[in-house]
Length: 256
Image 1 (cartoon, rainbow, N blue to C red):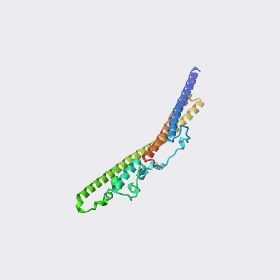
Image 2: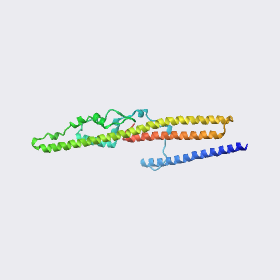
Image 3: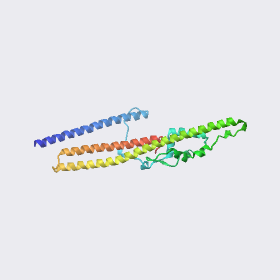
Image 4: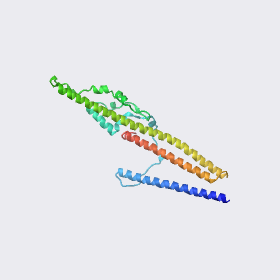
């Protein structure tokens, strides 16, 4: 009887400890929520206040993200737009459609755009045959014309290389964000399975206790593992949401 009483007392104490641990987690979460709400309120030019929000499990994203995003979405990035403007200015391509600057491909988590691909996809040769019209001047001004041509060609080369560098950097940012999104999505699936297994273990442990085949300490251990697995799943979900934010930022705010 004394041993059974000791086991019961231990079980009660562990139950209380688990409850206090869960409450402390909620305190931290609530604090982070208030800090985030205050920051968002300031961004909205409003005084700090509670913001309405939906449940985390209601957030969903298109499965098309697993297969990549079109390259032409990169044009929403400020650095790409600036480099594109310089390219247009250097080549005097005022009537060229913007879409012609971007290949009809997709950026994926496994493949980005290589520098050799850019020269092929953007038809470097066709760009450099565009010469400055003012160069066709009388022969007596030949040296001055040659200098103007050399400067124009150098500016064209600089503008093109800067545009190519911007595309490469943007492609790398998007590919990294997609890789993170895919890994976190896979992690969520695994953690969901882990949580389901521990939840069943808790139920079975409780049944064993009901039939006198186990003590309540086993139930508490199962519950602790179940809580840990649930938190791991939520962390993976949070990581997936962050990956989507990174992707949106990498695309210059142009992901739909």
